[in-house]
Amino acid sequence: MIGKRVTVKVDRAMGTYHPKHKDLYYPINYGYIEGIMAPDGEEQDAYLLGVLEPVETFTGKVIAIIHRTNDVEDKWVVAPDGMTFTVDEIRQQVHFQEQYFESEILL
View 1 (spheres, rainbow, N blue to C red):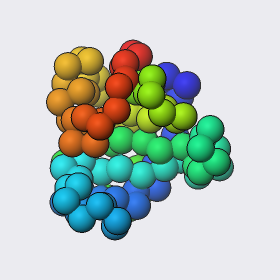
View 2: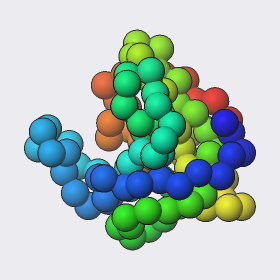
View 3: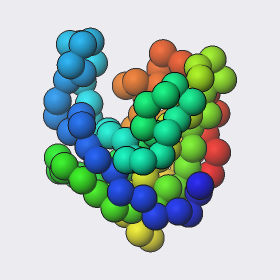
């Protein structure tokens, strides 16, 4: 999947809160890839990095996979073409949600 171009449908735009967990603030855009099913039976979730404003959809490249070792699904990390992030930079940006899981980031 890494390197594949995908379109993220953003359902939790940056600057919003989780619909059920009202204390979970989204500092980045977060959504899903339509038509690609994840092991949890829902469409594949994705973090969108490098886009500094709320968006509804965005097409970019999968630059990393966050493999959760204590959960059933992985999260994809999508960024604009040509933009890269280190493992530490990714971990810092997704910490708001990933702090509740054990994971490794695959580039």
